[in-house]
Length: 306
Image 1 (cartoon, rainbow, N blue to C red):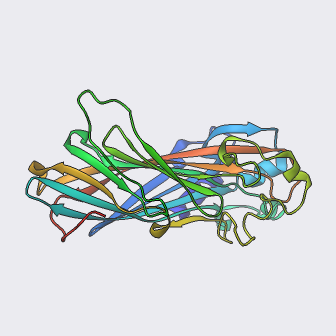
Image 2: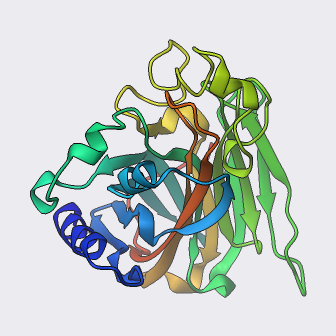
Image 3: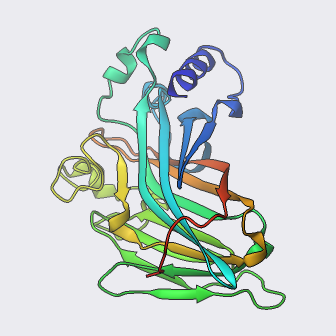
């Protein structure tokens, strides 16, 4: 998918025309008891959510030669009880990365070479998972591994609307994790990056003015200092032991033996703040994706919710 996205993106950059949304490519791989959902999107095909100042033309061009690659790896377990079915879902791994297009499709990589330290980075990751048939869900339970354990079960009352309790845990490296239930049937997870100097959300604001003038501030060292927000490769990566225990759905016993469609959807917010340039330009773009995956409601093994 990266191969084709790079090719189509390079062709669109060479031709002055509206940027096609078809360049957004998503897919999933369903193996026994696991899902792998991946999505690719060139920067120019993303919706601009906020923008501060104007980029110098060459910098804007250089930033256009990048694309998002994100992946979500899940494992699940099904337990058939006497009166209902329990589905436990682990989110094992998340990786979001901003990569340059493949060089073979670009006439010249010189423009990227002029700005080697400048690129967008993930600033917010929103993921929502739930059964396609909401009526099949009796309740949803959230639980969390943290110094302050949080557990809640949500059951839809009659004429239920959008109501929900939400719990937030501050993670290391400037990230916060928030977990909630939407419409009493879907689990929603948010990873949000905060500026360590202002404590504001990065995706919704411009960088503090002093960060452009003073060296060695957080934006400049976000990839290299000990408590950096990203890996040295620039990825936002989280493993399952960092943020939560399984999410548990309780479904109607009448569905036993059927294969239920589940929806995995989300939004990735990519932000550009200057890294080593003294520019006031910054912006945030958003990529949305949606995938359908199958979940056979057959007992997999003994399963006791935590």
